[in-house]
Length: 298
Image 1 (cartoon, rainbow, N blue to C red):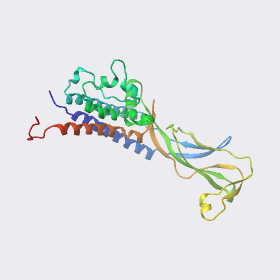
Image 2: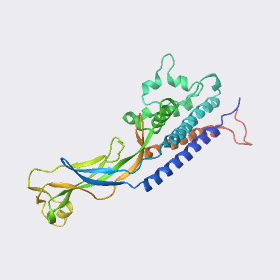
Image 3: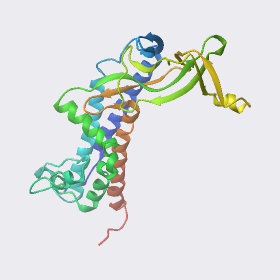
Image 4: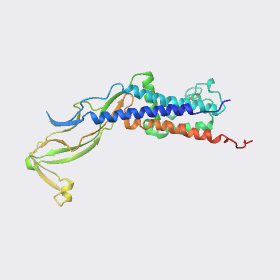
C-alpha cells in the first residue's frame, strides 16, 4: 500500500494563500485610490454626517474570492484522503471529506452513522482527535467567527448558490458635535464608533446625526483637556447643537456580503488555519517514518 503524501494538499493551500495575497493587494490599492470622504449636510431635523464613496470595488472580485476559498477547502479534503491512506485504509471505498461543523450535535449525529463517521471513514482515531479539536463548535458562541466556519460559508455559497458581493464599508469613525456660536462654538462629545454588523456604507449613507436642542442656553460638561488645565467642570453654551465635524477621515475597509458578512481582515485568517492543519499532520506522518538508514522497529 502506498504511503500518505500531503504534497498536493500543501500545494493547494499555497495556491490559496497566493490568491488571497493578490486579492488583498488589490483591496489595498482600491482603498488608496478611491477617494473616500465625508460631508456634513443640513437635514430637516438637524445635521447629518454622510459618507461619500465615489466608486465601489470591482464586481469580479467574487471570482477571486471563490477560487481561493475553493482551493483552501479542497486542500482539506485532500488532507483527509491522505490521512485515510496513512491509517491503512482505502479511501476510494468511501467518500471522505474534511468535516466543518459549528454545532457539536450536528457533527456527532446524522442518522445511522454520524457525519463524523461518514466523512472520516477509514481515518484512524489518532488523526480524528486533531480534526475534532479543530472544529468551529469548540469556540462555543463564537463558532461562527472561526476561520473554518467562514471557509465553509464561502464555499457553500460560491458552489451552490450565488456570489458574495464585495463592497466598501465604514470600519471606524470619530465625530465632534459642535455647540454654540461664534467664539463660543466648541466641539463636544467626541465619538469613536464601530459598525458592529459590517453594514456596507453606500454613497450618501448617514453615519451619524445631530439634532438641535430647544434651549437657547444650556450647561454642558467641559472638555477633559479644559479640566486638566484647571478649568471648570462645566460651561454655559449659547445656541443649539448646530452641526458635526469629522476630526479625521473615517477608517474604511472592503467587505464581502452574502449569508455571512466579513471584512478582508477576517478573511486573512482562513488560509493560515488550513495551512497549519496540514503542517501539523505532515509532522505527525513524517515523524513516524523511519529515517533513511535507521534500523526498522520490530
